[in-house]
Image: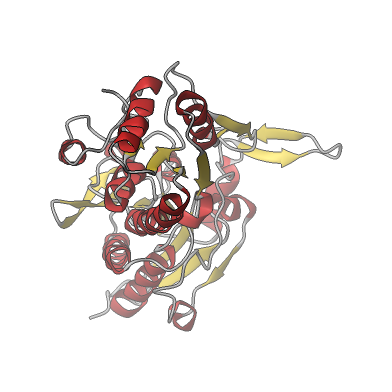
Length: 367
C-alpha cells in the first residue's frame, strides 16, 4: 500500500564508479515509486551536480533494465566535495572554495525530503557533514576497496575480486609458458581486501598488502624457493597502497582537485624491478587499474545492491535520516553516519584468510 504522504527523494552516486551502482539506483527509485508513491530526482555527476544544480526526474522506464549494467546512469565524480570544491580561474588556475551553501540551497529548491548518497568513505564523510548542516541524508556503502566501516561488505567488492581472480588465472598461464615472475597490481589505497581475497582466489604465491610490512629478502626467497622446487614461475599480487620496506608509498601524482590529492600507482613496477635485481629472474607487471571497476556486477553484488537500495528508500520514505544502510551478520541494518565515518575497515592481522593463505604456502613477505 502506498504511503499517505508522498515524499521526494534525491539520489546521487559519488566517488569512483563500480559495478552495482545502477542496481541501487533502480532499487531506490522503484521502491520509492511503487511502495510510497514518491518521486525521485537523479542528481548528475555526484556532488558536482548537487553543487551546480544538475538533476532530472527519474522515470520508472529509465531505471528498468539497468540491474546488470555497469557504471552509473547518473554519472559520478571524486572531485566534487562541496567543502573543497575546485574552480578554474580565467587564467586556468585551480582554486578551492567552500560551495556547501550551494549544495544545501539546491536541496531546498528541489524540495527534497531526503538525499540518498551512494558512495565510499569520502562520500560518507560528505554525507555526514551535510547531515550535520541539516540535510536529511541516507548513505549507501559502495567501494571495491571494501574499506567502509560499520558494514561487513560493500557492493562492488565481489565483482572486483572476481576480476582479479580471472586476471591471475590468465596471467599464470603465460607466466608458466615463459618461466617468469608475474606481478599483478590491484586497487586498494589503504586496505588490502582486494589483493588478499583476489590473490587467494587466484592462487597467488606472494600477496603484498598495506596492513603487512614486507621485506625484500622474504619476497626474493619465495621466488627462489619455487625455482628450486621446479616451479618455474611465480605469481605476485600487490595492492597499490602497499608500503615498501622503507615505509614509503608509491605515488603516481597529486591532484589538487581532489580532497585526498594523492593518487597511488606504480607499486607493481617497483616490486617487479626489485625482484629482477634481487633474484635474476625475469619479471613482468600488469596493472589492472580501472578494469576492476568496470563491467557487469556479479550476482552477489546485484543482490546486495538491491537490498541496500530498497532499505535506503524505505528509510527515506519513513522519515529516517542521518544513517547508512549496512550489512551485518547477514542482515541489513541502519547505522549512524558517525559510525560509518570512523576508522577505515582494514584487513585485521589475525584474519582467518591470512592464516589460511599461509597454510597453503602463500607468502606475505614478512617471514
